[in-house]
Every structure is written in structure tokens, then in C-alpha cells.
Length: 221
Image 1: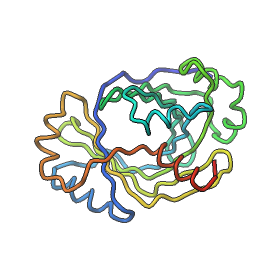
Image 2 (image 1 turned 30 degrees about the vertical axis):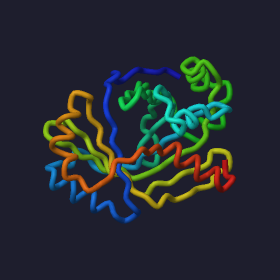
Image 3 (image 1 turned 45 degrees about the vertical axis):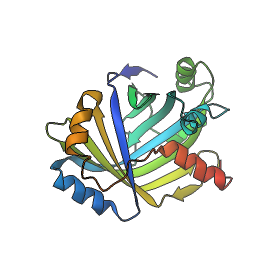
């Protein structure tokens, strides 16, 4: 499997806001009033999350550890034209990710079956200095917006589903998420022009943590 690094370590803030299902129109109306515009067509986002036997990535997030790392592979729509390995890093409120294009992955189920002793497993072991394994999969519909000349990006996620890798059981989530992403240098712009009259409450939110909690509660992982 040949890998290719495809983006840089840009430190950025990620601000997330949650609404009940079927209320995404509130997010869209808000973005219009703030002069955000649609950037791309909506698409399905699929993510497969990895962790070690002690669920260290999960625990680091729940415990609020300042420095933490999380691994996932991501692809879009129903079949993967390409698959990215994303290593998400967090230091305080700032985060960044390393993205690596994974070649010769065309079937996710087959990749999971062949994961033990595969090049993907070896790559993740080198990064984490320990063995990690696939835990849960997420799928959702994402819409993309931008502000100004792309200085602030916004996404709206709906139809969120969580899947257990071990049992393949699916849980539908009853919330919708709006997220803003922007570099640290634009934090004042965000606070001055986006946040002041915002009726939405910023919340800490991790799809991996929420999904694993829901599936574990039902003894499905």
C-alpha cells in the first residue's frame, strides 16, 4: 500500500453546536444571516475509528487530557474513490491533522477482514507505538459553507449513524451538528462577527466518543 502525505499541520479551532434531529434548518438560516455561502455539493462522509485495547483515545477525550491523538480512515459517498488516513491531534483548544492518501483500498469490508498484519495496521502501529484496531464506523450527510474568502468554514451534519465493527449493529443518532473550523489567527474575527448574537451554545462533541458510548450502552461493541 503506497501512502502519500497530502496536507500540512494547520492549527485551527473547531467549534461545534448541536440541535435535535430535523432542526438543521435553524443552522442554515443562521449561516445565511451571517453571509456564509455554499462551497461544495453535499456528500456522505464515512469514518472508521481506531483505538487500542485500553481505548486510550476515547479515555483521553472523556478525561479532557490537553494532548491527545485519534486515528480514522475516511472516504466519501457509498464507494471509496479514494481513502484517507487522518491522524487528528489536539493540544488544548487547538487541533490539527495529518492526512495521508491510502492507495489500493477499494473495498472497506475486505480491508477490515485483512487488517491483521496488513500495511495499514503496521502504519498505525508506527504512529501510535502500539497496536490499534478498528472500533466503530460513522456515516452522515455533510453540507459545506464558507465565510468571506474561506477564512472560516462551516459544515452541517445530518442523518448521523453509528456502526459497531464487531457486530455491525447500527444506531441512528437523534442530533444534528454545525461545526466551524478556522485557523487560530482568525479567532477574533470569529468572536467579533459570528459569535456575538449566536443563539446556539458551543458544546464539546466527538462523534467517536458519542458513538462508542451509545454502542457500549447497548453492549454492541
